[in-house]
Length: 146
Image (cartoon, rainbow, N blue to C red; front, side, top):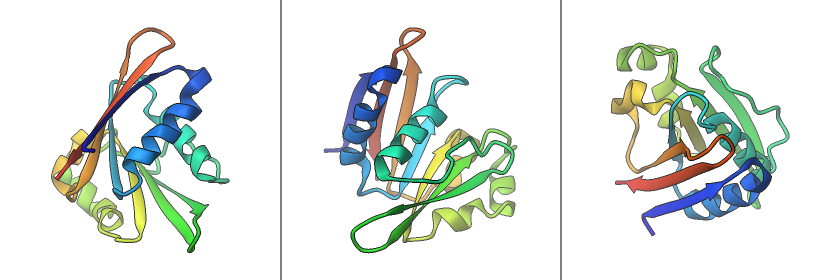
């Protein structure tokens, strides 16, 4: 399956995150797009909770990258949660070392505002669009980009 779609509210976001992960878990790079306030960080928080992340999950707007860990059957897995909102361009992303995280083969990368440096996203990745339907309901669509 190369695409996924669901709608959710805060009451059922955990179930939506679990369903999304079943679709997305084989891809290391997840690029979360959506307008300000659409719920990108909130959904990533729910996704991390589903994975068993015990670290505090928050938007890395000023740090650019937060690192989380979650247990798997084999080992502890790393997630790099990145927020590219404050980046000016691809060159700034490269200079900040973001490309290095993306190229690590043994880590997941959850990227908010990927439009800011789209050129450095390695294929394959999953493009995730979160849109507001109402004040409390969101639509998430995801597509595998080869």
